[in-house]
Image (cartoon, rainbow, N blue to C red):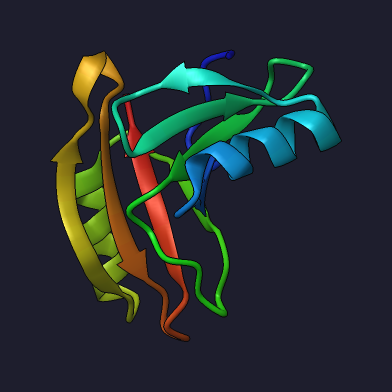
Length: 120
């Protein structure tokens, strides 16, 4: 996938308690490449254009709020500080992603929506 610019939606995380059914569903319906397994409970997907993707998370449980959007940022720590100053809350601090895929964090906006941050 191309390098993302700060502020772009860069990743969507979809709860997938049944990974096999989830991968079959999205690959058959939309032609997503669901072959990039990142361990037993996480699998990356990419759309047919190769321009956008996300992950299926077997450890996440579907909620009424649905999938999680991730926003690309230059510096997660600075972004989390700005989020707190603007009335949001940190839901998960900066965490390293294995395999050289950068870092992520979760936050809640002032309405309680959960979103993610990603940095290279």
